[in-house]
Length: 548
Image (cartoon, rainbow, N blue to C red):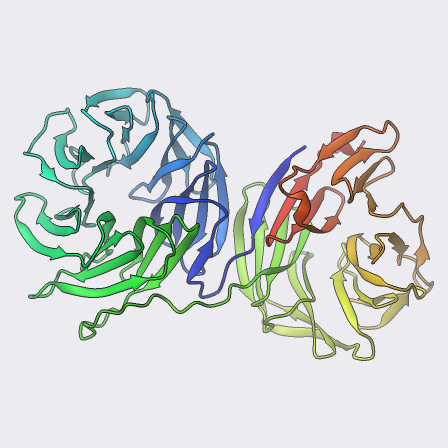
């Protein structure tokens, strides 16, 4: 058994910044999806509109240095420090093919316009051209130094450019050099392939792809260029130098500096436009920033400040539907997301009228999403699909510590300072409450009509609210800080492990790096959810053989 999914909480409806837990190496964007290569070897998939993380693609065994989408967006290509090139299905997130041959780290990848050939550049001083169908290396173009960049022309699959030894080289696909080298540290084609921007130290030059004629030339105020890109309409050129981004308008009769974007706290590693007015940057400061660029032709003034920082909403509730293989989360901005657990993809996103609420829960009941939250003395039941209230219950007489919708969707459980109470989910009628127990803390888990809660001393209490017309029955009380998963397996919250009570064997041990940050554990019959202080939810899938 292993941690199979990790849902990161930093997201927002109008997110300007997505914080990642690792060094972000490179970016690629297609429509509303951006792929971010990261140091541990994962590819993080973000929604460009919300800034939220929707998937993590795992497969490389070392840091991902480069990623790029195919022209049609159906495929993603990545290169890694593990010396491999991988082709991914962008829809499912699965690895389609892996290409072996480089002897050192792969620094850059590109896919031809016809999606038939992949080009990769490496520290091993070679450019390799891979046939996607056969997975064979068609050609090796040997260089004299590390190949830092390689890319196909967007419109001509026979035209290839590369950068090594601080020079730009142009090739045809047969491996013949077709022009004299130019000084360059980074390069990017315009979307229509008719122009490219060439950067060397602090100089930025825009040239015609066919004739090589210079169309515009700029000098950055400070720093050396690290990466560059065109906007999707070809009107703007963005270049990153250290922690600053310079944006030029190249379409007017007088090409000029349009904006200067400041906000990252470490060097910028990659840039890409997701729309004509939205620029995305990835930095060594472990953040991805979404910048809104003014599209007004009359706004010519440069600015020395970046986007206004806004607080990022946090996941405040997550529930699991084991049979359907989905997780449903809600954040403090009232955004509700439905996740496909096996694919780790966000399938649906909706909003509720609540903001900055700590007590909330969400469930999928008979294929219908239902959201519950507490504010101003009332518990509210909301239908996100229809955008209306289903029920409101006044509980202002008692201080609420937590609330949960039952696993079968029939009841709403409230935990107060010294008792737990159940209400009918659809009528709002009280159906039972537990005797008073001092120092109640919060819910830990539930399964149908059964509830586990815990006091401040770590003792769990199990209650069964399933007998109509009768008070809840108190079930056996396990030792402190233990949660029974079934008759023989329990979770020990002091040792952070699952243990077999018959044999005494440790079945699963939570990795040490997570242990100091555990704040809550939930169990729903198949998945164990561990909430962390770092605003992440670890989901453990327990196979049926484990539960026997």
